[in-house]
Image 1: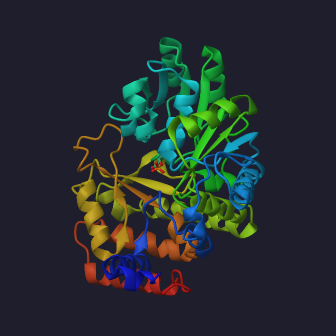
Image 2: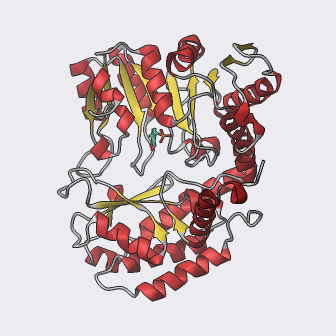
Image 3: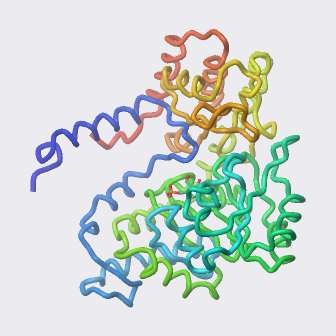
Length: 416
Ligand code: PLP
């Protein structure tokens, strides 16, 4: 029973190097966050050892009395936080949560209507190489080229034309709030189920900083590691009438033993997500993203051909449009990496450049807000980013400013 650094020095060294990377750079990948130390502890606990096929009180293994307590806490906390009737906390990830929902409620060949991947949707919303696009008949709706907003008239038209069994509302790269009531009306008009995938904005919902899709949707899925800031995993929230089908699609339909250590991490994260400190963090997250959008709307950025999709943001991310810039998405990502800021390049709607290059950047604020960044810090980050995307830039000076911010907000001071 040796500690990691003695049992496996190579893995230990890479873990240490990753901790140093997370501490010394500014993490602005919109889907990432820093889980609290209590979540890391729960995930690294002896719960790793336990088999618990089944659900609390109805297991196929003995010795589940303690994991039952933990899983029930996670379920009850998720129900209370989001106002859900039924919750399944076992999906290993967001993709498994969505796949389980399709498996529970659809038949192969059924039609779904989801946001196009190239317009901000997710792979699991019908991309042709994903399970959702291979097994189901996936039809895509889009954002309007004129303003970058979801084209609800098109959603309605496509719903009437294709009569989907399920409409999927949700996104991986979209800077505005969706109109869930409108999606509900469209779904009802064609007798479709409504799935909302709130993977990205669940933390904002928990904090009351974003409308809650739960009252409108038949099913809501989420990841627990993005704005929610917990372990890497998924959740399914459903109306009671779908509860049984959802549970049996997850287990035994798709998964075997649940990861009780991850479920413990979810329980801890859900407890924190109900606190005022969490709500305050989500407010800093959104206002930080708005600072970045505003800075990238200033004259020097406009002159360099940079703009922001939809003209701003209501959420935790900004989508930078480089279609009119000399710099492409890959070059912009590399430049920011060079000065110590991690983001990801992202296709923009009707992107003229290939998917491995792209004409966009997705910049997110959740991880830095968790680190303690406030408006002033985000204004400094915004300025650094805007200057780094100029035709000529002083990498050394910008790197120093990045390091100053990283030092000002130490990450995981209790970890070594
Ligand atoms: N749904 C949405 C909207 C996402 O953005 C993502 C992740 O990027 C997922 C689902 C999948 O989550 P995971 O990576 O945990 O499978």
